Amino acid sequence: MAEMQFIKLLPPTKYQLTYAFSPGTNSDAKSAVARAFSTWASNTQFTFSESPNHEIADLKIGFYRGDHGDGAPFNGANGILAHAFAPTDGRFHYNEDHSFSVEPVAGSFHLETVALHEIGHLLGLAHSQVQDAIMFPGIAAGTTKGLNADDIQGLKTLYDLEA
Ligand SMILES: [Zn+2]
Ligand SMILES: [Zn+2]
Figure (cartoon, helix red, strand yellow):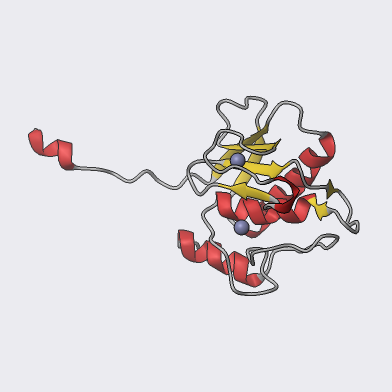
């Protein structure tokens, strides 16, 4: 029986994920993030459903500023736009000190484009060198971007998914 202790089974990948927003997240941001989740869902085997329970959701999204207690402080309006942790952490934070918008607007960052990028990180993707990929680091203000074949291929490789 003692040998049993050394057997470690890897958990199967969880493809059905729930997400929830921090209290106070505005409805424009919620809708933009929901659209980004459906874009990823329609291109992969993952499904995403909103949970009313922030505590137990797999993925947690919110707006934060400065040092917000996760060991990765934001640095005001000069710092990064957002960050997300790799699986299975599930946290995705927008930097509240930047300006975000639903539509592409000069001087503002497109909520849905940022969400597409950060959801890629939540699913385990690293940055890509392909300029048109959503996982290319950096998004210009006032512009939008969608998923690229490189992003979808990256995820398939990561999870060994069939095309
Ligand atoms: Zn954070
Ligand atoms: Zn990134």
